[in-house]
Length: 29
Image 1 (tube, rainbow, N blue to C red):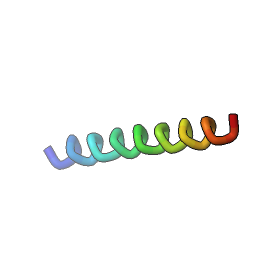
Image 2: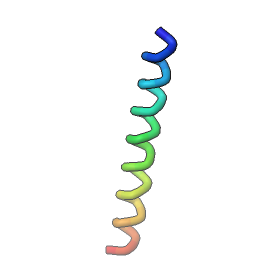
Image 3: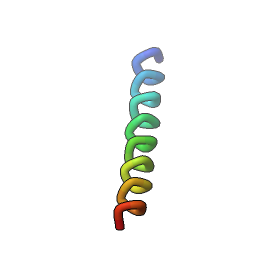
Image 4: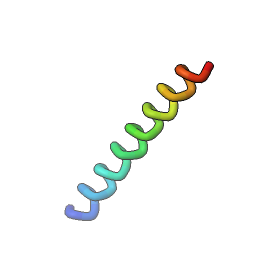
């Protein structure tokens, strides 16, 4: 159960980083 929570948190982190990368790309475009 704990490992599942960590995996979920990591997945949320990936999405947040992806969102930030999109924002940077939009600014540079």
